Image 1 (cartoon, rainbow, N blue to C red):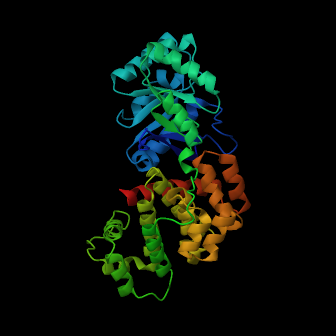
Image 2 (image 1 turned 120 degrees about the vertical axis):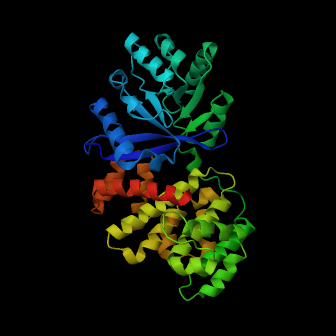
Image 3 (image 1 turned 30 degrees about the vertical axis):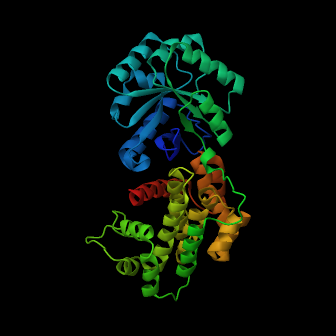
Length: 404
């Protein structure tokens, strides 16, 4: 039975989320996509993601890209899912038979969006090109000249949305844009672009001071509330979080002191860091904040599982701060110096060494569907595969609840 799922973001030209491709692993002995029975693998991901987990909780209501074989198209499996959220990805080895083309045309009439996965131009795919909405081209598998050639052939007779996948750098994004691509998939947005300045923006530094203040276990709640109240944006977001469905309170919290009292210092520290990052993230996509929060929640769950409950807030902050360099445009070293977080948090992030740094690598691998690497690490620390996957799914769901 299907047991692993990851979601990979797809951006538009404004770095806004267009949708997520659902990546999955058919069984514990498989590698990469790996399903020996592609039909069974897709059915499993549909059953798990759309029925048991809840697809909107994974994608936040954005489009979900899912692979379909020719057999599944002919079996009309896509109709199990709403056209409002599903984008049907037609696998690259799908032959454009009369039956397949008829099934695709029917999907189009029913309002489904169709994408051609890992497309390499060939005349035999012309009938599919006429029907498809999106054409995905792998920028790692194909060379620049091959991509240019394929784009010219596609655009000669068709007006299609071009999606560049396996994009790893902003240089690749710019190259794709120059060819008319408007959608981008890959982890280019996670690569830090460090500014020449040695420190972060003055406003961010002042808020980092707040984090240092919160780190003091003897800090006065009254003094802390007074500092937060002076920051309108911070106050608004903190109240929004404490009143969110995540905490499920049956009353409304209207005051900062009341919010701090309910949450406690540990929770306030976590959410203050998240809010600060949100404000600092002026050049990157909002997905960075979502990913940082997912990592934090995931690490917190690992801490509890490993009987490190009293240190779970440290694990959370390691996950949350793991994208701090990309979010703020500063080096990890300078961020850690400015926050004065404990060595237990700073060490793994700056050196990338130690048990906590290794545990962080688990979720970094899962994000890219690098299952074998993720599970090799989890096995070393006695964490079962199903637990790792469940923690990741729960972290996705909880982060979306908090960011609503």
